[in-house]
Image (cartoon, rainbow, N blue to C red; front, side, top):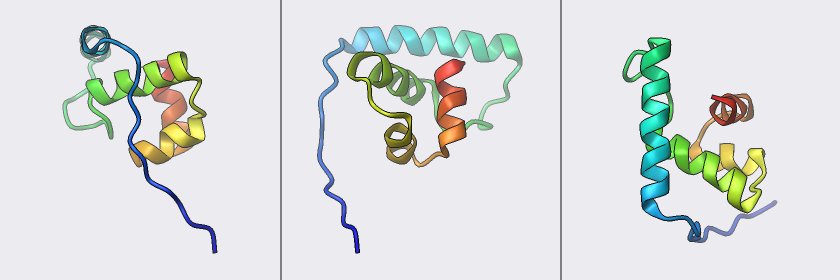
Length: 80
């Protein structure tokens, strides 16, 4: 039986960067007409997902698992 180790990591990005990206994502969602509460992740968590992919090269499978979403959903969040 496989086991997992849970750990905490720090993303070496200023919080202001993640907040700015979250504001851009919110604007994009508004432009698309996305209704509130229809996405599994809020814009800040989506911003962190994208930054982890860009900055740390975290695999999409891991990003999906960490956020409790499917791999296809992680790809959609990344390419939003």
